Length: 166
Image (cartoon, rainbow, N blue to C red; front, side, top):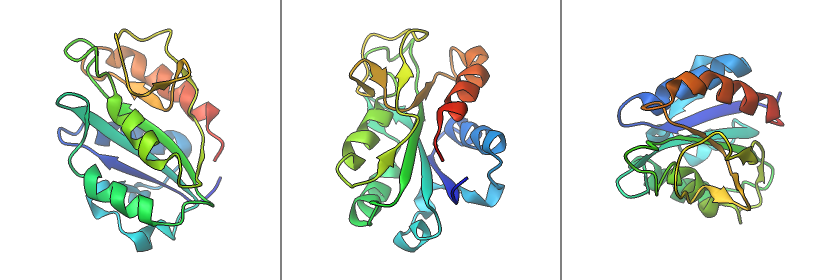
């Protein structure tokens, strides 16, 4: 496996918890699971693969710590990096913006030269009406609903982790 870090933005702790679960399943050391508010251009040089996670807030917005981080990522040379995306959302309270943050990150990074992995997640087993993270019929990362469907999270994470090319 490539040198991999997980950067997450989490206001309530749900996305942070998912980041640590993914790390355990991939054998990523806890010191490589990093709050995105600590992301620096120099820290990117230490990794070949980045797993990026954000919760979706308000009407389909990124978690606050991601706004500066996106600027850092876009300014960096990501042409040799592999990126996987995951996010948490609430499909019952916000069915029309479910896990939009995944799609927002994808849109910001798709023209950086990075290579995405884990970006074809079927929508079949999800309840939502709309999501910016659905492109060409699939989610472009792993969406999770820890508030309403936490009983499905482990199986979803397991399937996604197996699909990653890291």
